[in-house]
Amino acid sequence: MIEIKNLCKSFEDKEVLHNISAVFENGKTNLIIGQSGSGKTVLMKNLVGLLDPTSGEVLYDGRDFVSMSKREKVLLRREMGMIFQGAALFDSLTVLENVMFPLDMFSTMNYRDRVKRAQECLDRVNLTEAEKKFPGEISGGMQKRVAIARAIALNPQYLFCDEPNSGLDPKTSLVIDELLSSITKEYNTTTIINTHDMNSVMGIGENILFIYEGHKDWQGNSSEIMRSTNKHLTDFIFASDLLKEMRTAVNEKS
Image (cartoon, rainbow, N blue to C red; front, top):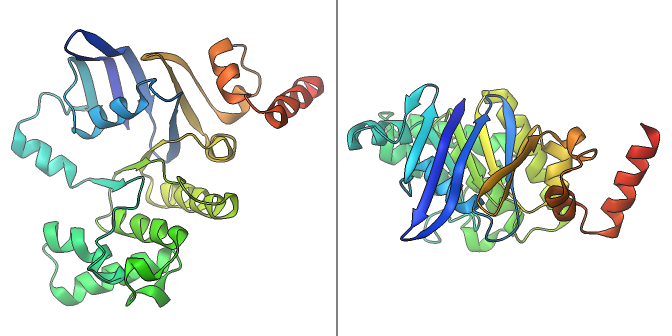
């Protein structure tokens, strides 16, 4: 579990995050949503230590990340897995070598065991046949699955995903969503996904944090979001006519 308490972040005289408190739960897909410029990316960066909050706490199972020493932060980061928006694979490494990279950097396994673990992770994302290929030789959706395999190689307790469906078609996005959801439950990770994808929100949004102009404006799940009366949230979620029709249908049934 990750908990943030009264988190604030300012850049010079501009406050980007204001007094945000929230809990991200184990074994659930926790989504952060909001308009561009709302502060959700800054929030994610504060969670993983790429930025230091101006004030407040970031607690990893009760451990305050903000007040840790550099050594303690390095050790905690070994418990984290990261999936970046553009997959961020190394073009000069094969798929297998990309997945092995965190194992080479941080594990004490011998080479044979590192290869075996990387192959297990590729098997988990159904990519064993691609292990000898290079990133440029596979599709964008396959690259995202490689990024997921790399992120889980060290059995992370905390999994962070920045726009994992960016640039993907709806069918491939659904595959990625289902994969992240199943891995979250299988490993009982605290998974936090920063997303604009409303299909992800409605499909795997077990715990959703909505940020509006740097404030926590709403928190709930995908069922509750359909009945929300929060104007900022409904304006954001139901921007399309199709979603407005879905919401009307749900409210008529209730």
